[in-house]
Length: 62
Image 1 (cartoon, rainbow, N blue to C red):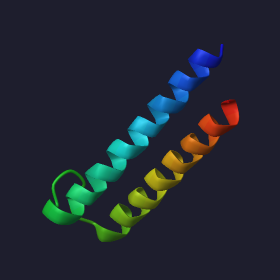
Image 2 (image 1 turned 90 degrees about the vertical axis):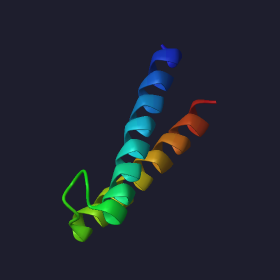
Image 3 (image 1 turned 180 degrees about the vertical axis):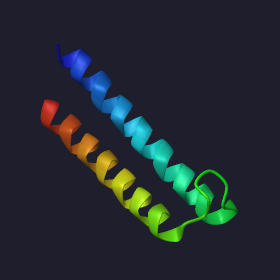
Image 4 (image 1 turned 60 degrees about the vertical axis):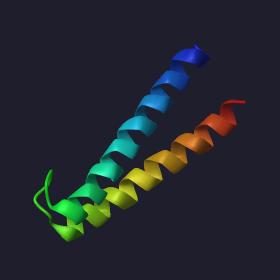
């Protein structure tokens, strides 16, 4: 059961990190989301929050 939960946490952290990278690329190149700065900032903050919560959850599983 714990292995399954870790997989879900790692998956969500991966998706969050991917969204953060895509938002940074969008700020630089205006490609995946159309270059809207407000949305990019919100995506980066949300991605950072998801990754932080994943790390905190993994620490709690020990």
